Length: 101
Image 1 (cartoon, rainbow, N blue to C red):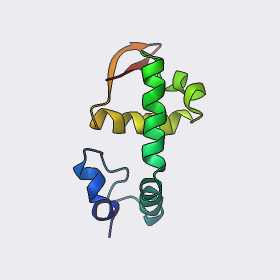
Image 2 (image 1 turned 180 degrees about the vertical axis):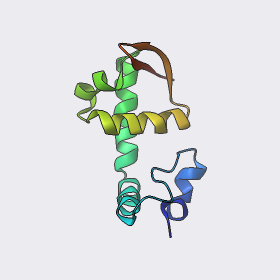
Image 3 (image 1 turned 60 degrees about the vertical axis):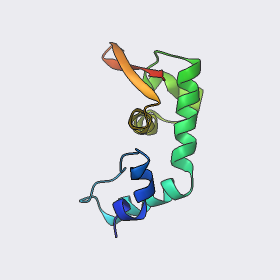
């Protein structure tokens, strides 16, 4: 069973899968755990609130406002785009600028 089967509810709510079918089993277990534990949603909300307070920031600039590293912020920005809660508009120093919707 893959993350696609276990977390079909998230996929149906517009969130993209966070692993690929070809990823190792450890990635599928980690993805299932981050979703089932609520960590994924909690991080999404942290990033969303930071975007509302600081529109036009880059993923790296969001780090001190969320307490998250750049990599998980980028992952949750993808989730926010999929759920139509964020958009990318413009660039600064080669990095995308993000806005809450």
